[in-house]
Amino acid sequence: MAAQPVSRMLRRVLRSSVRSCSSGAPVTQPHPGEPSQPAVEVPSGRRRFLMEHAAPFSAFLTDSFGRRHSYLRISLTEKCNLRCQYCMPEEGVPLTPKADLLTTEEILTLARLFVKEGVDKIRLTGGEPLIRPDVVDIVAQLHQLEGLRTLGITTNGINLARLLPQLQKAGLSTINISLDTLVPAKFEFIVRRKGFRKVMEGIHKAIELGYSPVKVNCVVMRGLNEDELLDFVALTEGLPLDVRFIEYMPFDGNKWNFKKMVSYKEMLDTLRQQWPELEKLTEEESSTAKAFKIPGFRGRVSFITSMSEHFCGTCNRLRITADGNLKVCLFGSSEVSLRDHLRAGASEEELLSIVGAAVGRKKRQHAGMFSISQMKNRPMILIELFLMCQDSPPAIPSISFRDSLHVPGLRHRQGHRVGGDQARQQDRGSAGGLPSDVEVPPPLTPGPARSRDGMRFQPRERRQVPFTPSPVTFNR
Image 1 (cartoon, rainbow, N blue to C red):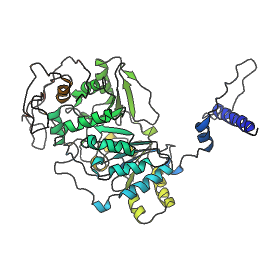
Image 2: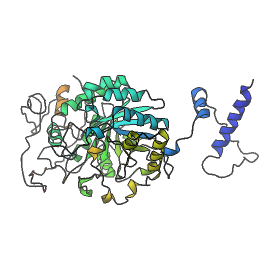
Image 3: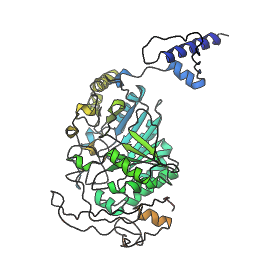
Image 4: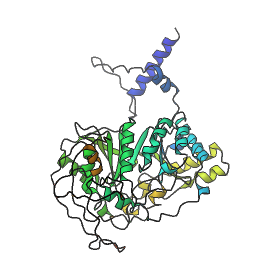
């Protein structure tokens, strides 16, 4: 009997809150003869309980522009098992001493603190997070945090196939895999290591275990891989992939300039020429991606428009570096050490005050630097695994447009032949791990100089070849 008045009161509260939402204007009642306001449906069960008991979002994670930061990215390591030319030199970069890196317990302590204050999504990054020995244990313990809804990881994919079954069992819910080319020889040229097939096997394993979509991050750089846009999109025809084209962004040491960046609109125009039926999808307000889908395709395509159309106004992300610094903006050089305060014995309240002060100083846009050329901070390898370019676009020797998908290894598994006068065979048993009868690009041959570091390359000849996408599967 007592429940009925409470239910009626809840209905009145919900109706009044919806009618007077956001505008601040006085509530006006309908005039006689006009249709009345439709009744608001009262949620039931768990949703009603959560609405009645919802706590306000933490003021410590809300900045002066009202942005609520519910997404935390944690770098597990500065190390990486690749040596990408556009990320760091072949010998590596100076790394933080192990004693100065966050321990597993410190990572979990900070994660608990942020989740308690309202963070509901955590992504583990690096360096390469999957080379950390206790990564599975970290995932398992983070998965136990009450209030955490999404736990993801960004990886280069080299160790993914081997570790993913354990990671899935531990509670990993989403995967982002970095892959910037579908040409095996170009892959080895870019990363200075073998591993193309391992990355592809990692993507296959993610699909096999039911991850959908599997996100593939591709940083697009002019003179390097902008000619592979259609190839990447064609993969979404038969596979549950979300191919995410990322605008090339400036970081310390990459000598960024406009000539290297391929804008979102330019990429979109290229795709629409091939697929005019490309449809725009609706995304969450805080999403960094502009998502599209080709009707009939299994996957989709997204664009991360950090440079041409920034999403600072809805940014909900915070970052903790491997050495324990809090970054409130990816492009900002300002950092505060949570590690030092944690090791000095700071209480939870003191840590929250430090976090709140840092979040409160967050600028409206790109760390307050409205000129793109100003955006430089620590190298990205020391923030999280992301691609950046050095002196000039890592010049690619003459690699002709061969197969329509540029994935000879995958098409070999499928039983396809790479035909035409571009077909070349070369024994790859000692380079790349591909079978000797798989079609591969021609050898990398020197040519005229293109960069100031003494390396000589032959400029690519761009040939217009009709593009005929075909579905690709990972049949074994």
